[in-house]
Amino acid sequence: MNKVLGIINGTEFTIGDTLLELSYLVAALLFVTGLKMLSHPETARKGNLWAFGGMALAMLTTLLLHKDGEGNQISLTNIWIILAAIGVGAAIGWIIARKVKMTAMPQLVSFYNATGGAASALVALLEYPNAVAGDVGSILVTVLGLIIGAVAFSGSMIAFGKLDGKVGDIMKPFMTYLNLFLMALTLGLGIYIIVSPNPPAEMIWAIYTLLALSIVYGVMFVMPIGGADMPVVISLLNSFTGIAAAMAGFIYNNQAMILGGILVGAAGMILTVLMCKAMNRSLINVIIGAFGGGASAASGEQGTIKEITLSDAAVLMSYSQRIVIIPGYGLAVAQAQHIAQELDELLEGKGVDVKYAIHPVAGRMPGHMNVLLAEADVPYEKLVEMDDINPDMPNVDVAIVIGANDVVNPAAYDDPGSPIYGMPIIDAHLAKNIIIMKRGMGKGYAGIENALFFNDKTRMLFGDAKGSIQKLVTEIKSI
Image (cartoon, rainbow, N blue to C red):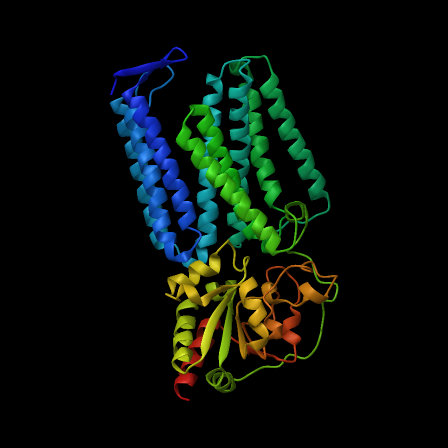
């Protein structure tokens, strides 16, 4: 392993160094393959395993073959300490992942994202004193890693609190100006640290101040953003964590960390842009705007609410030819995905064609509905994206809305005063009949009235979604 193969720029290059670089190349290929497979539910599980294999390979070869700047490999004592830390973290992660409810998955994603940001920020904080004064490149990546990692950490924790209902929105006009001031102050201090000729040992006060400012900015950055924008915020913060990890890779000159961080950062940013497009809004509008807490200009009584009985709903569904189920966060809260799948199978047995219409931002995180329904063993081919299902909606006999609200609100089309005006929605209002399952007349997560409730074709089936569907299944079986 220590046989010298050659000398590059005065540095000896051994067999171990070659194997380490090759392992990073293989790990990068496995990361890319895993990401590609994650793009479809049928291959997502295998994609996770491929990406895990890449990370395991990179970690193993780093432990065995990595050398520091003086050519020393990791000591055996440190290897055991690292393995122990990995074991503890893996055990905690396994227990949490096994116990977490599917409804809490968005919170878990935010929490894990926060830990990634915190790790990158701590790497930057610990390595800054070792930087060489005047080495602008090294200090630059350290400062960027600290700022981005700290913002990702505190922002993700606030997102976790919002998703869990423990943190409310603060949407005041002055928040935009306060956030701009904090951002300018944080960036200004970061630039000062980068260009300062003083040795890092004399700038410790500045780096800790920068850490505190970055954490505060992360909190204030997410605090005014409304709940309906949480899927976008989660993917954006995930991108931040990836970028921070790449900065940590530059600090340690570790190609695997750099590649992994770049892939996560790029994937998160692409997803963020796609979700903004699905909402017909710019990223700046999401970040600065107060979407999710406003009221429609046309809010108020818009018509008459009409209810439907369980028996009438069962008859209507049983003698339909095409039914589209539109799930939302209410489905997750009621834990109704399994009974919804049972209803689906029962109707299919009666010759009804049943599909699920999936909106890109339904739920509280990207792909939330896909994951939820996959857990209930709903066939992947039944999950139809918004753009594909909308042209067929006029031919649908019954659109069943379970816990969705804002993603089917026609105000997006015809109410210029609505904060969701222009947002693409699932065209439930074009179906021949509409059944909406809700506990009551509460507004959606965007905090605005849903005009679909007052549609002449709409019938409300009030009650807990799981209980209502269970009763529907019983009624349909008796027909």
